[in-house]
Image 1 (spheres, rainbow, N blue to C red):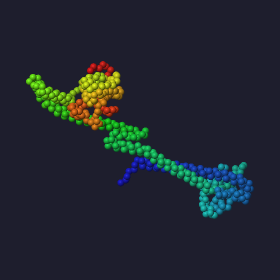
Image 2 (tube, helix red, strand yellow):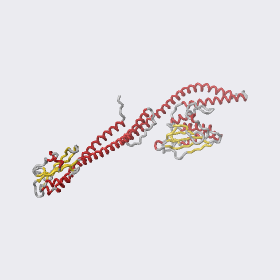
Image 3 (tube, rainbow, N blue to C red):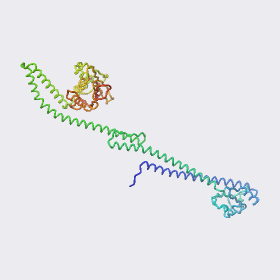
Image 4 (cartoon, rainbow, N blue to C red):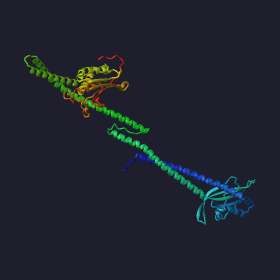
Length: 493
């Protein structure tokens, strides 16, 4: 089974193949141009050499002095200039060095016939064998016609054979430099392709890892891709998608919790209504009979004391039944626009006697010009009253209770934040999740329905209530209620 190549490997291989092909093509073109330039330079040098040789042997050539020409030729022969041949106008050798005479195919044959014009020349690359050293020599052979001033007829020609050893060495050096440059370019291309592949595949790997985590339900995970290209845009889109999925998940969890809570309350409501009905009727008869008996003068002081205790117990049971029915009863809100400070003052007034008995200080921190709240005033007062009553019971004498109101957000998304704090013993961290559950209480007396009822009312107003941390000792409840601006007169509460 073939293992598929990774994107990074395929990218690097593609870049390398492209670099090799383009590099080879470019080096081939440059090499051909350099070789052609070197050969053209050799031809130019050959032209200059033939002109110089004719000027050096001008007098001897015009006088057909072969011996003098050969003496001059011997002085010009070196490692670069291999042979020299002068031909007369009949294309017969007039003078040459000894080396070329050993090669009759070169020595005896001129490349020109009669009728050549000035400026014409012949050049070719050929190989000849040096009999003395037994090596093959690459030669650039150039033959140029000789014209004398004032005569339109060719007088002869001069042929030279130039060694291509220096040119070949220069060509080899050029090729070596090109190979070196190509190798360095290929190495740079490899490094560049690795870096480029890394810059592309690393964000992709992060993107893939992030999508895997998101697919497993980790919607809080964000893909950290800082590039500003298409991959960065895709990462931002995935992050936005994960945030939306997280919000959807949270909303679903909240909806499920509310559904479970609603089903629980419905069950409690059915059971409570049945229990309350079964208790209330006989309890009313008991209460009336106790009242009749206690009104009789035939009882002594001790018996009347027992009857009073019994009446208090019956009142306690009636209060419990009333709170239970209020909690389980689902009724519509009777909303209107209120100044929230008036609701706070109304709740404070109802527990002011309890606060005075314990000498508890009550403070308000409410900014001016708060928007009106569209709420059910009676029920919202009940929420504040339940929390304030719990706070007054929790703090010691000369304690403090503070209500702080602030406005969050702007425009149509304004939310009124109400904090009710005290300096009592506080609520342990592990108990904060349970205090809003029905019938859960931390007090020795009470039914555990006050905060549960408060939460139900706040959520009916599309708000939220929770316990938050505060500096120092004590508890702090935070209530968030959506609000809207209303410039018209509000209803006095």
